[in-house]
Length: 409
Length: 153
Picture 1 (spheres, each protein chain N blue to C red):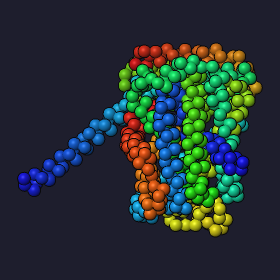
Picture 2: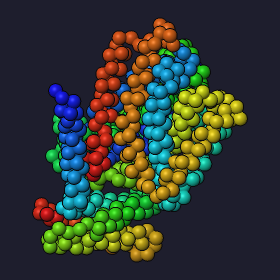
Picture 3: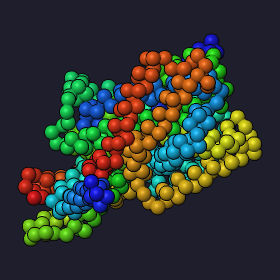
Picture 4: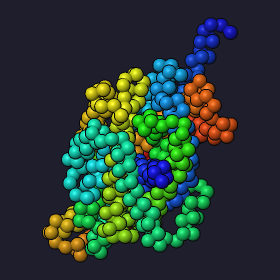
């Protein structure tokens, strides 16, 4: 019974933890401009993150070490540094976006300027990382993030023309009023949002925090293979709500306040309250994950003592690096930069950094020295390789598309 | 092949890359500063903001949102309108028709800002939301006229 509860909890937190500010904003932007025309990208992204998160969790459970630690050892300090540089910078950008997201969610509830909420949000993240137990962090934010299901409920309450939505989802090519480059820019952004690098590093380091062994592999696989796809459905529901309410009104999403308007339209104040709580939990949870991932990547590369299972005094550099990252994030936001713009850049640059994150994982998952008999099978390698090709194409195309489309303007 | 010829053969692709890079950069810069493109973008940005304000006000009047959420949506809409107006105001005209369009567009965006400000005032207890709808309609009509084919071109 206890095991069943643990599995259910893992799945629920995976659903709630899948959506972050990048998913929220990008899906709403895409829904308001393309309807469900890019829903296929979410499906591709979800399968990709399932493949690599599962691989990364298996590496951690079998070897008893976090993926990043092994990458440095297996591929050497130079390749490890390239991996660290790309992952860390993207992670920092994502952390900045998430802190901004928490502030914007608090603004929706209070109408107080987000600039005032940003330091409060960062302090809240720091105190949670410093004091709270790992499992508590994961479960509370994941379960509260589940209130985002209100987007799926809202979609049904809006009583859309399902045939029209299905038509958008199955439509080939771009809508007539949108340039082809813009369509592909958002496809890459959506893919980057679904496959954000921090998710795998957090998943792998979390496995060490929770002391996974080979016995936990089935639970881990279930969490990933059920939780993430259901999280992907939430993403599609967010795009769907925007497609039903905002697209016909010619409203292109540029702020978080627009993302929640369809929910209020469908379910009034009660639904809106659920949406705000969900956004707050999702962004706060992702801020915790990105903060921890910053510490994990640095500590694992430089060989520092790390982990929430150690007291802060026993992992001082790990905790200090996270505090510095939070300061940097708040400093970036204090310049007055729009958190939504930071979010849009973070998902695009995530796409650029994807090969440096996922190629090493594929290599290590095939190394018998670390994995023994638990190396990838042929099927997994075939899927992994196909995904690496997709990831490479997305990475190469991201910056030119960003410039050509003026950031999807 | 002599050494100098080999060297120039190696340099030729570099020169081609530089020329192509300059051409792409120049075309991108031209696109960025093209008044027509800038005006089109501003019309779209303004229309989106006005429609957002309309939706937020409608939901508020129906009692379907929190005042804090409506206020935030309206403030965001106002920021978009001000950004659009600022971008238009800073665009250099290339012809007398560009200059006239810029003036019309600034007027239309100002109507949008006024309407959204009226809504924000109403949220703060100054005036009522009933008066906001006609003001938003007027701003939308003005922007639509400029957004129609040939409007900003």
